[in-house]
Length: 355
Image (tube, rainbow, N blue to C red):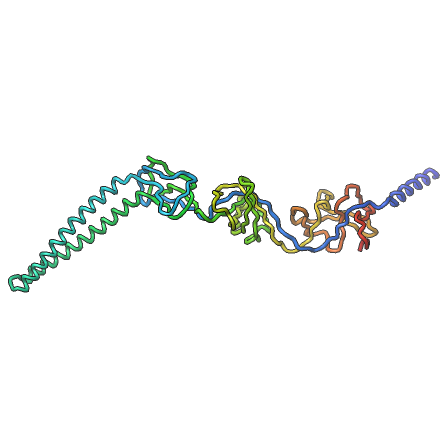
């Protein structure tokens, strides 16, 4: 009996000693409802806002491609040619038909004039004039058709050369000399010489869907001295099932006019307001039973574990959706030696105590 009493005394003494431990200095973090921001760090490449693939209106055998990838081109500049032999022959035939029809129309007109004059002098007949009028009408019709055919032949010949529709940069040669191409088949790919956008792939996030119009700060990877600003203009509505990412496009406001930035790698930083919420520092986060938790400072400045629900992670904080409320205190830095019931104090010696 005496032995049990002695053991009990020792245990109570140890408990009293533990209870009397000096308060552990830790960082007190007062939970507040505060404005939140959404920050995303992205990596992508620069593209032209407008791209076009040009080809021949009619198919044929390519005999010449006049530009190389990366070449700047001006509006109207020839880009490629197909063999014009058939079109040249067709134009010669059409030109000869126009000349013949022109001569026939001139003869018919002279005959009509003579028939009208003879009828007026009384030496001709009405039937002769009617015949002359019909012949003239037929000759005029033949000339009109021949002229139209010549126009078509000349356009077909012109179509053996494709021209740049505007000032641009060649991004790809899609056909080579000797190749047979079909009508409208792409031969050269062009990017507009003005208008640039940054294209990123980013993990999908509900908050990301609100980023349309958000500013983006860009810095060059291939061009480290390059710094630009942009604005988010498009977020793809479909998530790539293979990567879980979405495509983000941001139109660049101040791309240098004298630098070919197409394909250049850039870093992008998106920063915009995201409502209000509770954010605690990363150092406040711990785990209990395999779930997220924080050390809460309670009555008499003794700590206890409080499970929390994490909404998302920010660059410097954890956004909490459930488990803590404004006015409470959580432990920030210094939680390594904590256990439930351990007494703590604010390492910054903030006055006022726990409320």
